Length: 248
Ligand code: ATP
Image 1 (cartoon, rainbow, N blue to C red):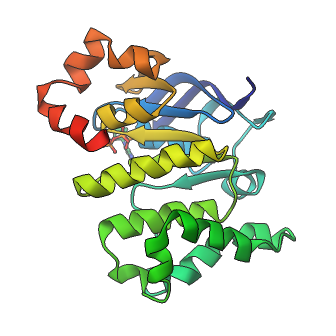
Image 2: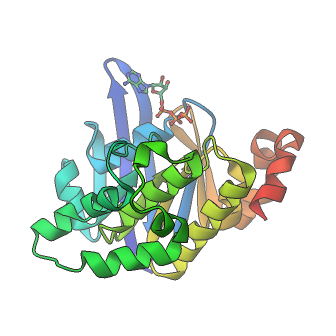
């Protein structure tokens, strides 16, 4: 299987403090790969560096091409898309206009398929269609997350990077979001999923990396990590038992 993304010895520093050190990871075509780890492990920093939002050292290879210095606009044009933890929607604009903005780069490069793509997004998220004229800022947290994912899909990405899509959402909505992540893989989108909800992430993913203190501590098939005593103790213990119900 070809890798859509390959990261080799990626390091990121904020001033003198190194937040991510020599991380290597890969996402195979059509795979869901998850990065789990505690607060401050460097998950968001890693995604930002891959996307070119932060300067980094190391090598990022995307869709068969090495990016010496990832640069965000170019990465978007090449088919990489990030749904950030803060969603970053335009609150006063309607749902539909937020979605259209997601297709902006494609449109600029001559693609005129946004109407069809929007219907695909609406099919995936009927709630967005029902409320398409509503201002994004008035939506619930779950609806906002759906819109953020929908907007990313408007760019028809080869690789979708999701930063904690379940953060702050009610259990039923979390389940719905993970159902959609699995559905996206079925449709051929490769996904790099950053999550603190380790149980749900390991259930949906094919492969997983455990990040601690800016370094990869463990990696392997998601199914194997789910049964690894170290992962169970640190990430799947009794405290997170309730997540199992939410993820199933
Ligand atoms: P969380 O799950 O809490 O979002 P994370 O794994 O995504 O955590 P990062 O947000 O990548 O972790 O942070 C990694 C480290 O880098 C942390 O120690 C954090 O304090 C630090 N850091 C993040 N952003 C900055 C910044 N802009 N300036 C300085 N340090 C930062």
